[in-house]
Length: 326
Image (cartoon, rainbow, N blue to C red; front, side, top):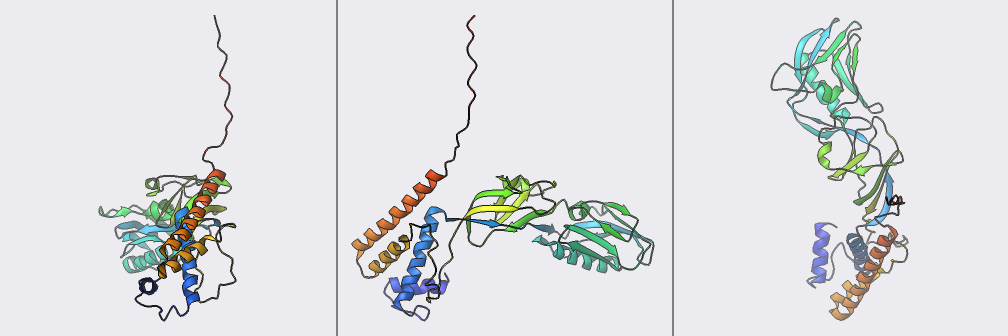
């Protein structure tokens, strides 16, 4: 809901104004109150159940003091060992393509050679290529300038020398595999990677994920879900979560749509809208009755959900060994 819409409803409920340019009919108001009822239900219950298949995307950080020492031997692009800072402006949680563009600009500015860095979105690898010569050795090493951070492993996943015209890295060590959660996300219930449950873990283990492998842990921050260890390829990534239903249009274009709440609880938004309309008419006792019916339905739903999802499952326990009496 926009700030302007909030002003409209605040005026109406305070009887400062009965209508607005965006609220033209009584039905529009009732539709919005029904939306409010759905939202309040989701807020009190933590959301309605939903599931989604996600795609992980490598994200990178790049700082102005990240650097590599680049040497090119042979060909017209020969370059004596040179420290190359990888960017002029810091980047946080950006794509591999953004990183490649930033580093390409620096190679061109600092080294003044015809070389290019590319990012493969399928294999998740950076490749530095000599564009001008077929007889080239490319070496990526540690910068000698003490104020620089060695970014060879961070970005390329390896350092060293290759006797060909391109230097292909491994999966970068400081790469974080994460993706945005759905826009209606409220709270997580269950996470699977390749049909295996992934467990929640403290976010501090994800700060510098220097490990690749099958993800066994996840963490959520700022509506991003991050995996650890970093996977080396995409597998089935399923989340079950609680969602906030989207509002229906108050113009009537969604009037034929089904209520997004679970079957058996479709009356609850009606009780909520009824209470708000009665309050407008100063029928506070009747409004209180409608709110009580709404609250009772929310409580019934919460109890039913909790009973269907016990936190402990029965497990078999071995019998203790019999006591031996000497």
